[in-house]
Amino acid sequence: MLESYLARLRARQANRLIPGHLRQGAVLDIGCGTQPYFLSHTFFREKYAIDQAKPLPGNSGIHWFSLNLNEAPLLPFEETFFSAVTLLAVVEHINPESMVALFKEIYRILQPGGMVIITTPAAWSNSLLRRMARINLVSKEEIDEHVYAYTLPLLGWYLGKAGFEMGKVKFGYFEGMLNLWATAEK
Image (tube, rainbow, N blue to C red; front, side, top):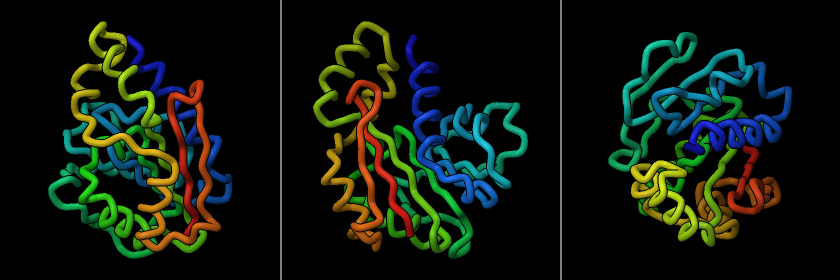
């Protein structure tokens, strides 16, 4: 019931966080889903998507890769290829054992000055999301696939382990503090 509304809010937040000069390059949206709302509602010179699922028809202009990053957190792109990488409501689905490797891959494929943008439910909102899923306000399947709930300091730790300088990492909350965002510049 709320899924499309929440996708719009995440996309709006991500678009606010991305500086205009990065939009002349390529963006990679990791975990975009079969209908990549963010990629359909943002401007970049080139758009790339990674998801476990195959895309639904109608996603023209998006270069698609079907990968399971929990099994193999490797990204099939050249070094410094992207100006931005987004993970919108995705890290909670990634096994913590894979996070450092995935963030190192993101660091590798980002251009100098490029940025990663992350959104995820705040750790304290996990029980609320589970209650909302029981009454079908949000997708029970999606919530059941959450493997970990992150805090801002923990996301910062993972980003630091991947090579991002802490002075170039920023954090905040949105959606009534139910969700958090983090950005890190290479």
